[in-house]
Image 1 (cartoon, rainbow, N blue to C red):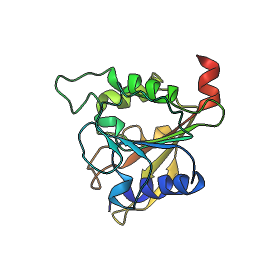
Image 2 (tube, rainbow, N blue to C red):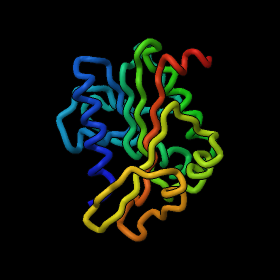
Image 3 (cartoon, rainbow, N blue to C red):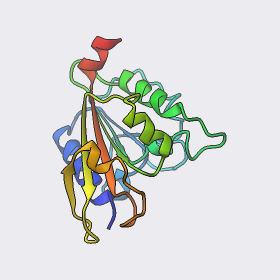
Image 4 (tube, helix red, strand yellow):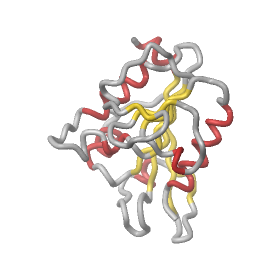
Length: 181
Protein backbone atom coordinates (compact mmCIF):
# COMPACT_ATOMS: atom_id res chain seq x y z
CA UNK A 1 0.00 0.00 0.00
CA UNK A 2 2.69 2.48 -1.01
CA UNK A 3 4.34 4.00 -4.09
CA UNK A 4 5.92 0.67 -5.05
CA UNK A 5 2.55 -0.44 -6.44
CA UNK A 6 2.74 2.11 -9.25
CA UNK A 7 6.55 2.27 -9.60
CA UNK A 8 7.12 -1.47 -9.89
CA UNK A 9 4.31 -1.93 -12.42
CA UNK A 10 5.78 0.84 -14.63
CA UNK A 11 9.28 -0.64 -14.33
CA UNK A 12 8.14 -4.21 -15.04
CA UNK A 13 6.37 -3.01 -18.18
CA UNK A 14 9.69 -1.55 -19.38
CA UNK A 15 11.55 -4.75 -18.50
CA UNK A 16 9.07 -6.75 -20.59
CA UNK A 17 9.44 -4.35 -23.55
CA UNK A 18 13.22 -4.68 -23.34
CA UNK A 19 13.53 -8.44 -22.95
CA UNK A 20 16.79 -9.80 -24.36
CA UNK A 21 18.40 -6.35 -24.18
CA UNK A 22 21.15 -5.12 -21.86
CA UNK A 23 19.49 -3.83 -18.67
CA UNK A 24 20.91 -2.19 -15.54
CA UNK A 25 18.91 -1.56 -12.41
CA UNK A 26 20.12 0.98 -9.86
CA UNK A 27 19.09 -0.26 -6.43
CA UNK A 28 18.04 -3.85 -5.84
CA UNK A 29 14.27 -3.35 -5.96
CA UNK A 30 12.67 -5.43 -8.74
CA UNK A 31 14.28 -8.71 -7.63
CA UNK A 32 12.24 -8.38 -4.42
CA UNK A 33 9.10 -8.88 -6.55
CA UNK A 34 10.20 -10.94 -9.57
CA UNK A 35 13.03 -13.23 -10.67
CA UNK A 36 15.56 -11.12 -12.53
CA UNK A 37 18.54 -11.72 -14.81
CA UNK A 38 19.65 -8.14 -15.44
CA UNK A 39 22.64 -6.35 -13.90
CA UNK A 40 22.01 -4.52 -10.64
CA UNK A 41 24.27 -1.93 -9.02
CA UNK A 42 23.58 -1.42 -5.32
CA UNK A 43 26.17 -0.15 -2.88
CA UNK A 44 24.77 -2.06 0.10
CA UNK A 45 22.46 -4.96 -0.76
CA UNK A 46 23.90 -8.37 -1.51
CA UNK A 47 22.26 -10.63 -4.06
CA UNK A 48 22.36 -12.46 -7.37
CA UNK A 49 23.61 -10.21 -10.21
CA UNK A 50 24.18 -7.38 -7.68
CA UNK A 51 27.33 -5.33 -8.17
CA UNK A 52 28.21 -3.76 -4.80
CA UNK A 53 29.54 -0.43 -5.95
CA UNK A 54 28.62 3.20 -5.50
CA UNK A 55 26.61 4.28 -8.56
CA UNK A 56 28.71 7.44 -8.91
CA UNK A 57 31.85 5.30 -9.31
CA UNK A 58 30.25 2.51 -11.36
CA UNK A 59 31.78 2.06 -14.81
CA UNK A 60 31.16 -0.58 -17.41
CA UNK A 61 32.45 -1.40 -20.86
CA UNK A 62 28.84 -2.29 -21.65
CA UNK A 63 26.31 0.20 -22.90
CA UNK A 64 22.84 -0.40 -21.55
CA UNK A 65 19.62 -0.35 -23.55
CA UNK A 66 17.61 0.27 -20.39
CA UNK A 67 18.60 1.68 -17.00
CA UNK A 68 15.91 1.62 -14.30
CA UNK A 69 15.96 3.19 -10.84
CA UNK A 70 12.90 2.77 -8.64
CA UNK A 71 12.91 5.11 -5.63
CA UNK A 72 16.65 4.74 -5.07
CA UNK A 73 18.43 7.90 -6.20
CA UNK A 74 16.89 9.98 -3.41
CA UNK A 75 19.06 8.05 -0.93
CA UNK A 76 22.33 8.82 -2.73
CA UNK A 77 24.31 11.37 -0.76
CA UNK A 78 21.31 11.98 1.54
CA UNK A 79 21.31 8.81 3.65
CA UNK A 80 25.11 8.71 3.72
CA UNK A 81 27.67 10.10 6.07
CA UNK A 82 29.01 12.58 5.34
CA UNK A 83 26.02 13.95 3.45
CA UNK A 84 26.79 15.04 -0.13
CA UNK A 85 24.06 17.18 -1.70
CA UNK A 86 25.76 17.16 -5.12
CA UNK A 87 25.96 13.40 -5.47
CA UNK A 88 22.56 12.75 -7.10
CA UNK A 89 23.28 14.91 -10.19
CA UNK A 90 26.68 13.18 -10.52
CA UNK A 91 25.00 9.78 -10.30
CA UNK A 92 22.47 10.66 -13.02
CA UNK A 93 25.22 12.02 -15.27
CA UNK A 94 27.29 8.87 -14.77
CA UNK A 95 24.32 6.64 -15.58
CA UNK A 96 23.44 8.63 -18.70
CA UNK A 97 26.97 7.95 -20.00
CA UNK A 98 26.26 4.21 -19.67
CA UNK A 99 23.24 4.37 -22.01
CA UNK A 100 23.39 2.94 -25.49
CA UNK A 101 23.78 6.20 -27.47
CA UNK A 102 21.49 4.97 -30.27
CA UNK A 103 18.53 3.63 -28.39
CA UNK A 104 19.19 3.68 -24.63
CA UNK A 105 16.54 4.77 -22.16
CA UNK A 106 16.85 5.64 -18.48
CA UNK A 107 13.71 5.45 -16.33
CA UNK A 108 13.83 6.93 -12.83
CA UNK A 109 11.19 7.32 -10.13
CA UNK A 110 11.77 9.76 -7.27
CA UNK A 111 9.51 10.37 -4.28
CA UNK A 112 8.82 14.01 -3.48
CA UNK A 113 9.20 15.09 0.13
CA UNK A 114 11.74 12.49 1.25
CA UNK A 115 14.91 14.40 0.34
CA UNK A 116 14.50 18.18 0.47
CA UNK A 117 17.72 18.74 -1.49
CA UNK A 118 16.47 16.50 -4.29
CA UNK A 119 13.15 18.35 -4.33
CA UNK A 120 15.06 21.63 -4.75
CA UNK A 121 17.27 20.16 -7.53
CA UNK A 122 14.12 19.13 -9.41
CA UNK A 123 12.34 22.44 -8.76
CA UNK A 124 15.37 24.47 -9.89
CA UNK A 125 15.87 22.18 -12.93
CA UNK A 126 19.40 21.31 -11.82
CA UNK A 127 18.33 17.73 -12.47
CA UNK A 128 17.02 17.62 -16.01
CA UNK A 129 15.20 14.79 -17.68
CA UNK A 130 14.26 14.72 -21.35
CA UNK A 131 10.76 13.77 -20.23
CA UNK A 132 9.32 14.36 -16.79
CA UNK A 133 5.98 13.19 -15.43
CA UNK A 134 4.33 13.44 -12.04
CA UNK A 135 2.03 11.17 -10.07
CA UNK A 136 0.02 12.08 -6.97
CA UNK A 137 -1.49 9.69 -4.47
CA UNK A 138 -5.14 10.55 -3.90
CA UNK A 139 -6.47 7.97 -1.44
CA UNK A 140 -5.72 5.67 1.47
CA UNK A 141 -6.49 2.85 -0.98
CA UNK A 142 -3.27 3.76 -2.81
CA UNK A 143 -4.87 5.27 -5.90
CA UNK A 144 -2.61 7.46 -8.04
CA UNK A 145 -3.30 9.99 -10.77
CA UNK A 146 -1.11 11.76 -13.28
CA UNK A 147 -0.51 15.30 -12.08
CA UNK A 148 1.50 18.46 -12.69
CA UNK A 149 4.60 19.69 -10.87
CA UNK A 150 2.41 22.22 -9.06
CA UNK A 151 0.23 19.35 -7.81
CA UNK A 152 3.12 17.36 -6.31
CA UNK A 153 5.87 19.84 -5.42
CA UNK A 154 4.74 20.34 -1.84
CA UNK A 155 4.01 16.66 -1.19
CA UNK A 156 4.96 15.37 2.23
CA UNK A 157 6.57 11.97 2.60
CA UNK A 158 4.39 9.94 4.96
CA UNK A 159 1.55 12.47 5.11
CA UNK A 160 -1.37 12.21 4.54
CA UNK A 161 -0.70 8.63 3.44
CA UNK A 162 2.23 6.30 4.26
CA UNK A 163 5.30 6.60 2.03
CA UNK A 164 5.40 8.90 -0.97
CA UNK A 165 2.40 11.05 -1.83
CA UNK A 166 4.00 12.53 -4.95
CA UNK A 167 6.36 10.99 -7.49
CA UNK A 168 8.54 12.26 -10.29
CA UNK A 169 9.03 9.93 -13.24
CA UNK A 170 12.07 11.01 -15.22
CA UNK A 171 13.25 9.71 -18.58
CA UNK A 172 16.58 10.25 -20.29
CA UNK A 173 17.19 9.13 -23.88
CA UNK A 174 20.68 7.98 -24.80
CA UNK A 175 20.63 9.66 -28.21
CA UNK A 176 19.57 12.99 -26.68
CA UNK A 177 22.23 12.76 -23.99
CA UNK A 178 25.03 11.89 -26.42
CA UNK A 179 24.17 14.97 -28.53
CA UNK A 180 24.72 17.18 -25.47
CA UNK A 181 28.17 15.82 -24.57
